[in-house]
Image (tube, rainbow, N blue to C red; front, side, top):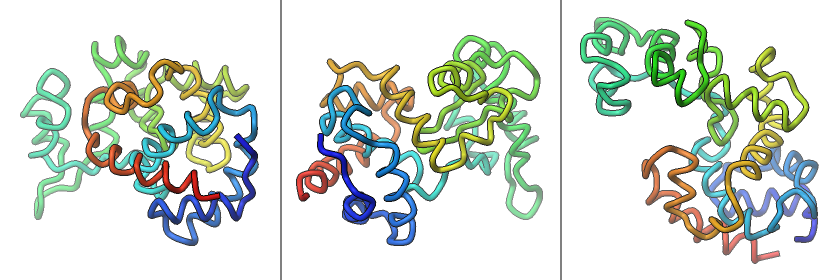
Length: 219
């Protein structure tokens, strides 16, 4: 993989649907953070990495999870094993009646036994403190601690670093190289499950993958 300039990255990102101003900002970040040795498999990694981070971040516009869920959407989204119907009615958005209590939502759906087992969340406010950030949606105390160690940053102590573009891309890359083995590259469904825990957004990521492959090849 040859190192790309900021303008080349901006072209790639706009080709993938990223707004021009956003692509310009991120083009500089990508040019600084992505070089010949960043990914173990170069463009083969990028062809799977970019579609997932573009989808998860709404084309690089959202670096922090939006938890503004309606009461009706909470159980279908997260499952009754993580939030009960009664809890959903208490903390979810009900038009004309109450706004979503996003902090409470995070602490419920990312807390409890499920949060301890899957995310390493051990304190009552960990669900909110370590909510999804970065373009890949890094979530949970355990993940913040693990990736923080990989990039040499105290993400547990300063979690908001994960919502700053340069740090967030560095974090995404470290997570990817740690969690996505070379043998999985090209396996969009398997990668999607590793990134998101299931097949949510799979169709969109598949479509983006085709777009990204064309954009990367158009140097």
